[in-house]
Image (cartoon, rainbow, N blue to C red; front, side):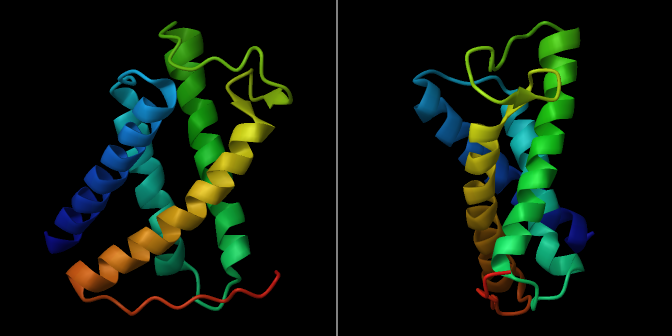
Length: 142
């Protein structure tokens, strides 16, 4: 039960943080599904150091996080924007679109940076509040 409460806590933290970042970026309240998507992505990215050895390069972990976030954004975009026509985000004027127009390279790079923040925050929260292993990182180039 404690494991599920921990994951729920992390889900709420990441969902709330991203919801606030996106609301500030857009200048208006974002759609509630972004809280859910960000919570899911945050928990998945946070699992990187739980399932992969700490010795993996931090930059490689960020790459894995970017792939997780981009895939989740693409699938969510197809459901929310294409099928349900909610038009939560629109990359029609953004260069280098892919995944049926639901993702783009500039935001992949943003996800890369956000993944690094997410990894560090997740590790810190797990260490500080749940007594898990003290975070350590390998900052080798690759």
